[in-house]
Each structure stands twice: as C-alpha cells, then as structure tokens.
Length: 235
Image 1: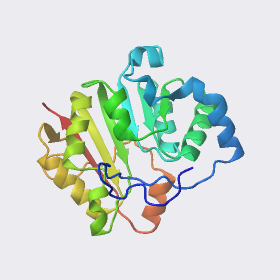
Image 2: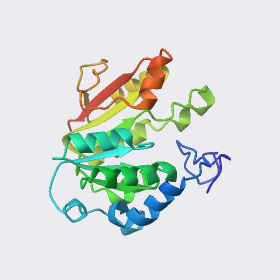
Image 3: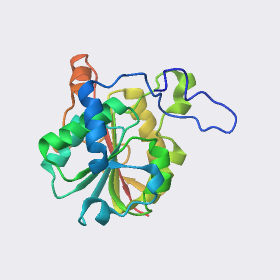
Image 4: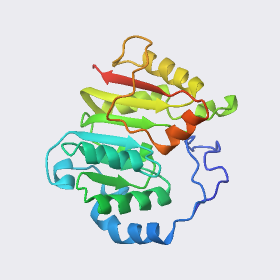
C-alpha cells in the first residue's frame, strides 16, 4: 500500500494529483469482500472502453460517481433508483471492500466499481457522450492556497467531463467547504458548454435523492454549510 508520502508532489512529466492514497488497512471482512466479490462487481482499467449493456446486462441511464468514500451514499442511491446503472470510482481499497460487501448484502445488481484513478478511468474506459450524470460529492477541498492547484475541479477537468456527458447530462457537485464551493462555481460558470441548472451564480437545493452521509452530518454538526452545484451539458 502506498503511504501518505506525497504522491501528488509535482515532478517532471507527472500530473498533479488531487488525492493522496492513505495507508489505511482493510479489515478482514473488507479483504474477504474484495477477494470474493471483485470478480462479480469490479471493473479493470486494463479492459478498456466499457460496454454498459454488457457490463450491467441491460440498457439504462448511467450515473458515474467519483470518489465514493466508504460507499454509503452510492449504495443508498442505487437502492432507491433501481432503474439506473451506477459506476463508482474510489482509490482507497478499504472503501471499495466495504462497498462490495454492501452490494452483496443489499442484493444490488446495478453497481459496478473501479479501484483506480478517476482521470485514467475517464480517459480509457468511458465513451464520449455516454453518461447521464457525473457526481462528485465532498472531494478534498485542499484549503491551503499553495495546494489549490490540486483541487480536482479545474477548467481542464470540466471539459474532460463534458466530453463524457450526453448533451442534457448533468455534473453534480457537493461540498461543505464554502471557499471550494466558490471555486467550483467560478470554474464551472466559466466553462464552455455548460449551463447552471439553478440559474446563473446560484447554488442548487440538495436533491431529495442525494443521501445525507455521515460525513455531511458530522460537518453540519460542526456548523458547516453544504453547497450543491448542478451544471448541465448544453453543447
């Protein structure tokens, strides 16, 4: 397992990463779930471009979530919206192991999982104009000014995502860090080919279908606000 020594440190010819792979150990249960359930629900970067009908055994709207953490909200959305197919991406194996166990526990058939870098997955595995929704909930805000370049929501990232969304598809973000919400709003409002679903400069109300996670509850208990932003691909 890679430790917390700076994977995202700037080095020649290396992309600045928006995350650090932390040295968290999987529990015995998470390890067992990873080993036993990955063949059924796991997706590999090396397999290349996904065919959603083959992957899920059906045609349905596709929702992709970047950074699902321990997977609670992704499980809840998949359970409440069985008519949609969900793809989750997470770099931290303990969260992936836990999610796999929850998929099996809930007997869900509409979730597939990558344990890899979202940028690489989008580049190599997701066809252009194929996604109905992209979700990015509570990413690392990188609050220190010198780290702002590591925030995942940047102009180039917005355009990379736009290529993967269908026209009319939506990019949904949420954060409990107000300066990052303002950064997201600035980046997305300036991005070509998008329209703010809530109106120019406006934050969206939290949709009923986005679960309140333990992370969000903890932030709200500490007095943090929560900001949702939803931008629609229009071109």
